[in-house]
Image 1 (cartoon, chains in turn brown, green):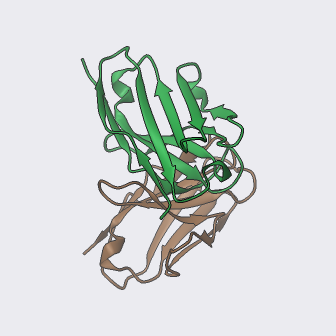
Image 2 (spheres, chains in turn orange, purple; image 1 turned 180 degrees about the vertical axis):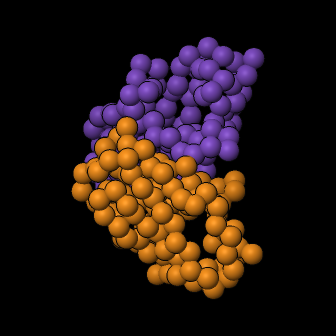
Length: 107
Length: 121
């Protein structure tokens, strides 16, 4: 099983700040099958990014994904209050696994 | 608009079985596959398995092989799951999720609202 390690565990930032979330895989996996999700309390996850860097439908361009190999990054360029959530990475190159999440708090 | 609507929450006793239903609307059901994902309280997400809504083919996560079954019914645009021999650590919110592409390992572009299942004696 591929283990995804997300860091930091919690990120506390102000509106307008840039957020950088990391996801590191325990081993390489096929192709570019890495996704990011946002989950707010009491809600289902929402797909933000798939294929490392492709934005899902309706996702604003301040969300971007990058990376390769075993290291991947989600960047939120200008935080807005509604971005407060837990963000998960997922690999789907093999049997899908998710990271444990990074909580983003807006001050 | 396209959506997945799941059946309501349940409380089950250890050793029992649970069933969750997921009804799709607003899109062509057989054009998108369905996966099931669960989330224990305060925990992360865990993929359970995939089913083709076109062929009925399935792929189960190794952890759930033997006690987990997925089915679909294209006439009602519904995907169902059953988990048997429940234990307390099966307490979780269970989600159906629409697969983005056509592979059994995939990202998920639409999710049901979740079904809370509590396993307790």
